[in-house]
Amino acid sequence: MRLYHIGAKMYSCNMDLNIVLVFVALVMVSAIFGSRISSKSGMPVLLIFLVLGMLAGVDGLLGIDFEDYDAANTICSAALIFIMFYGGFGTSWKAARPVAAPSIVLASAGVVMTAMVTGVFCHLVLGMQWLDAMLLGSVLSSTDAASVFSILRSRRLSLKYGTSSLLEMESGSNDPAAYMLVMIFLEMRSAGSPSFLTISYDVFSQVVYAMAIGVALAWATKQILGRFSFPEGFTQIFILAVALLSYALPSLVGGNGYLGAYLVGILLGNMKMEGKKDLVSFFNVFNGMMQILIFFLLGLLASPRSLLAEIHVGLLISVCMILVARPVTVALLTLPFRFPLRQQAVICMAGLRGASSIVFSIVVTVAGAYAYGSIFNTVFVVVLVSILLQGTLLPFVSRKVGMIDEEEDVLKTFNDYEESSIEFVPIQLSPDSAWTGRRIMDIDTPPDSIVAAIERDGVPLVPKGDSVLNAGDRIILGMAKPQLDTSVSLCEETVSSHHPWVGRTLGDIRPKELVLMILRDGKCIIPTGGTEVRKGDVLVKNEQR
Image (cartoon, rainbow, N blue to C red):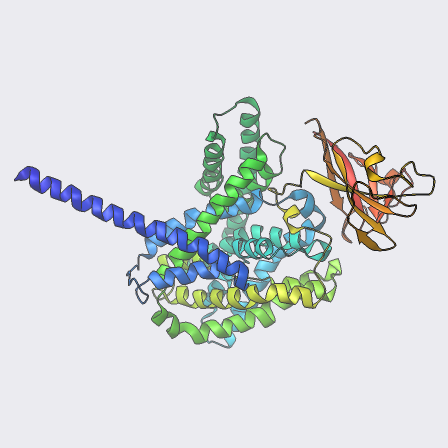
């Protein structure tokens, strides 16, 4: 009988485990199909993850009653580490460098200004106490990297003036500033009125310790990867461990763990290392899993009935942030950079709130600073409105104001971008060309190349073997790209209006990289020391590794 009871208990445990596994698998499959619906409908995919969680929640189809804010705080905070790490690891510094200054300003001063404007609104209009209002403004002050990355990639939004890179860097790096504000106002709320010296040290310790440890950890990781080779697949595990250390080590000494994670991510992601493309692709997938986990869990934690109780407050705050806080912040902080109005409009529309704001609201709830769950419901409503309204309208507004750059690919701004192995070379035939008057089958083309198209008097023609080439024809050759030695690194860089080289000659600049060619207005320029760099130039450079 005893063995029977033990066997029955084990069978029951296995049944429970199997049910959990089936549920998790169904959630993942639903998320995959949800992403397909998102790509066709234009609805932000992260909103679908939230809806899936709410459908499984206490008021949904499955009726799962999940109200454990402590567990949600632990799980979501851990997942946010990897989202922050990938926010840096997946961002191409080459693409972001020209817009680094305005990105950093928006990610730091922009967060503070957004929190202040939102806090003042909550105090004056909604009647909140000053500390409560500023704490809520701080929770909502950062834009969400997962939401911004998802929309830019899924909708292939290539924006002019380097705006795609600006939004990626701003959203990827502004969570640490928001978290720091949340911690400061939580301390002020619990400790009364801490001294200016105490607050100053908190800011100093969070920033300096995180930066010092982050730089040291990234350097040590680079050295280890350069000296040791890991079995296949273990490099990814090693970098996962580094991502955890990048948060935990600064946090242990009072530093900002999220800043440490982002800093280590962007340093490692832009270092020259073997197999980096595979690492970025791995973290892209892993980051997607973390997004599904966070947004589904947050949806599961939310109750539509509780959200309805806070919907009026959330809608009012959403209106303030979309129409006042974000535009005022963007207009004032980008004033020194002289951004065009249409660029400002897109940056304003891209001020999406997302998972980080909800996770910070859970942190505040667990700390007992608000009535249990009230700030979570308010922030959840704001995030829903932001993703649904701003996320859906961002592609439309970008096209409406003429900010789409048809000649660029937004995927180039991510480190997992891989160019096609085939390139197309246009050739204009002159009367004295060796190919003029001859059939395609009779000409000698370069190795591994083919005549892909002929353009004659502006009319495209399909080339055949017996097609005769005429003077004035524009021939498009398709050929395999040469596989360069690993010691040579050729790259392209588009010069924005904020690039430090604009208006200067290469002789004055004396760049470390050799500028091989400049593409300007469809023409190829072989540069000399007296060649002036202009806005819109595409620099083809040779970087020594």
